[in-house]
Image 1 (cartoon, rainbow, N blue to C red):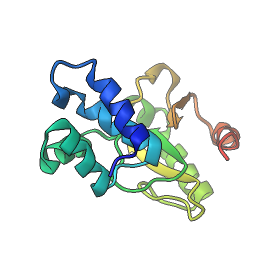
Image 2: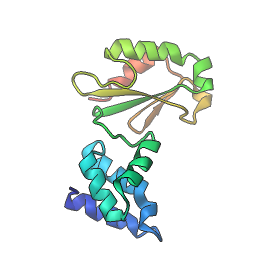
Image 3: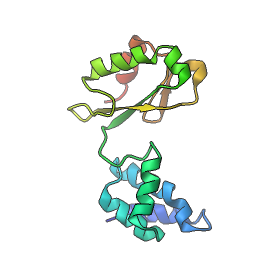
Image 4: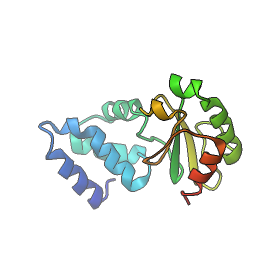
Length: 154
């Protein structure tokens, strides 16, 4: 269920917590780093390692919007739709992204390159509208800036 590398990384994370259940988010992030998402099978492996039921761990996994419970593209685009980004034009950016990528929110491009997801806040209101691709924040978006930004992600 879990690879040796995943198990070793999770066990390293466990050393930082007095109760191994408290490491559940970090354990899920380890699996996601290795696999791109958290499958039912890997969820079972993590739950067993942490002494949790699958339902308990799935409740955690589905609560956090940065844990993916279904496959995503090689690059995940989070488009902020907070009030700041909304007033600064995120709707136009969303429409532009959807047109450019040929997908709607929550979908993945046919080539598996991008998944487009909304996010409530990226904490960069001073640079609204914003998006995050993988771990990279892009602010003060225009359609031209989006096009240039996406070129960086093969």
